[in-house]
Length: 223
Ligand code: DC
Image 1: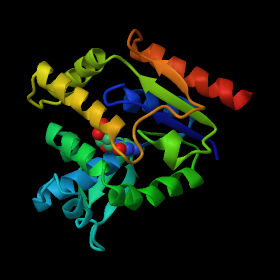
Image 2 (image 1 turned 90 degrees about the vertical axis):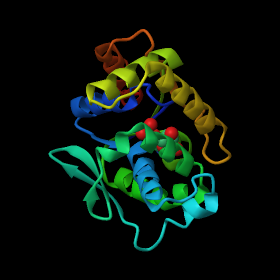
Image 3 (image 1 turned 180 degrees about the horizontal axis):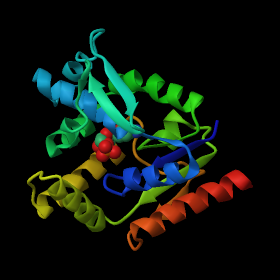
Image 4 (image 1 turned 90 degrees about the horizontal axis):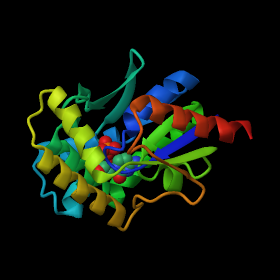
C-alpha cells in the first residue's frame, strides 16, 4: 500500500489540500485530528477536569466507541454510535482535542485504528505525528505549513462560513497557543520528520498548494 503522511500545524490547510490531492490520486484521505476531536468532545460531555491527565485517561473506558466511517466517500466521526462530525469542529472541541492529545493513553488508544487503516488502503493521512510516529515507514512524508496569520485568516473564514461566531484575534491567539502546546508536549510533539519535504503554502492559492503536494508525492513515488 502507498501511504502518504501529511503533518503540520493547525490551519495549514492540511485537510482541504490533502482531500483534493487524495481525490486526484484515487487514495483515501484520513483526517486524524477528527479522532482526537471526538475523544475531546467525549471528555467535554463527561465534564471531566481538562487539566487532569488521569481524568481524561479515565474516559477511555471499554464502553467508549470511537468510529470512523466513510459515508458518500466522506469521513464521518461517530461517538458511541452518534454522528458528531459537526460538533467536533467548534472552537471548544479544538481546544479539547489539543488537551486530550497530550495524554499518552489517548494517543495509544487511537494508534491501532490509524495504523490499521493505513495497512489496508492507499491513503493520505494527515495529523501531527503521522510521519514521525504513526507511519514512520510512509513512502512520502510532507510537512505542510504556512504563517500563523495566514492560517488564522483561513480558519476564521472557514468558521464564519459555517455560521460559527468568532473573532479573528481570538482565532489567531487560539492558533498560536495550540501550535505551542502541540509542538512542546512531551509525547509525539509536532515536528517535521527527518525525511519529510516541507511545503509552505503561505503564498499559494488552494490550487497551487494541491499541485505542490501532488508533485511532491509523484516525485517520491516515481523515483
Ligand atoms: O488537525 P486538527 O486541528 O483537527 O487537530 C486537533 C488537535 O488534535 C490538534 O490540536 C492536535 C491533535 N492532533 C494530534 O495530536 N495528533 C494528530 N495526529 C492529529 C491531531
